[in-house]
Length: 108
Image (cartoon, rainbow, N blue to C red; front, top):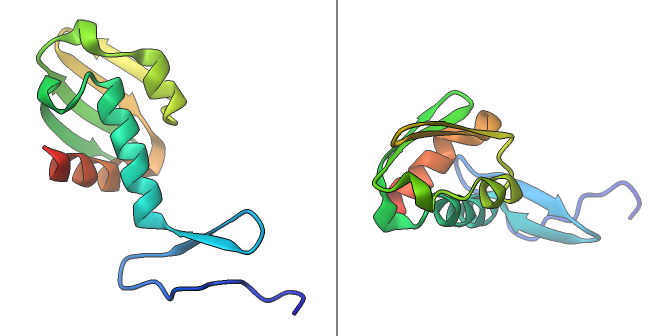
């Protein structure tokens, strides 16, 4: 019917369903995991990441080799900006920083 939402799976605690396209839903966790994978790739892979921490709107990371960090790939993954200071790399991602940091930590 017109005006009804098409939600195929009820979200569990801490999860929300996100409507994508016509009549399709994707689990927010799957979308977040995919974005986290893209960010990890942009940071040079899991082995290049020493530490990651979510801080309000940024992922604060320390990497082994800063030359492996790909700013364009991070922006393509949805980053609003990248700030580098030696081996410290901050990826500006907005309010998704904490959930993304948890996803990345789970990959490490």
